[in-house]
Image: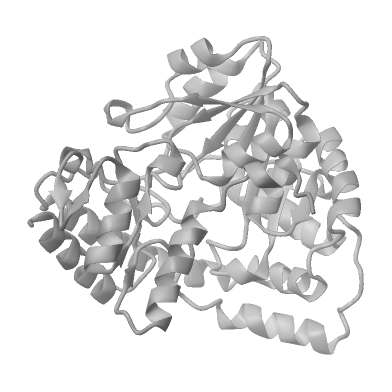
Length: 396
């Protein structure tokens, strides 16, 4: 029987594929160190789990409005006001089924076939596929380490044409582990003035920032920026709630209403008792739970970057946000290691897993073949073991 061309053309997620392969080997008894995870290794805080149990026992198990219960949308609007300086009515907020759903639905709501979407590298692997599923065209803008892998206003202006419909910004960045400064974002906002380009601002790692990094929501930069920005966030990273599948989008009312109409036919509401737990997640105990994770991630990130830079032929900037290091390993391309010819990041990752039992994600699916991504959302013991193996493997 026929499979749609649309489905055939969508590749599997590279990050999920790496994690699945590592788990498969572990199930066979292989001692694999996995650096592929895009999920915190902390448990969901107890007070959130208790809130879910309470809502279940209270019978919160029925349908809700497709966009989410008004209590949660109000709590999110209050969070955005108090923490981000964004003034949104609850009607300008929609609760989605995880961050991926937020990205997909936002693009379905505002993009038409033939539209172009500017994707600065490195980009999350899901972005180009969701662009194409909307019938639009990814317009990749190649960045490099000279600008910290950030798009410049000049690059942005050069990329914009009459077909440009959206710019995707992700700060703190997955996979790059970098964060745009407020000044850099203001320059981007200025470059967009006078255009009809939406900004999809993915801010899901906003709380995981390190050192003297300052986070700012793109929509706060000006009235013009606010009018063109869809702000995406969620509960997966900040509260270690990856399996709960709760994301949200805030923005101009017409776009949010369009997303709601789509969601009413696609999925209807996010899990009901999870929505009630999410209200509690945004409550008073949140700061302590978040800070515990953030401090530990910062400690691991510093260690990982230092170790990577001590390995011959590896260059890595210290992470300022999220929980990833994104080293340049391209000086090893062209080598043959353990009988495997290392032509690029794909071969690098495959050979490392096969020969040294270390799983990381190649940079090619992120648009940067010179790099690989390592997650430090795992114990310091595992990080040390994995980097020891990487260093030994590269020394062959």
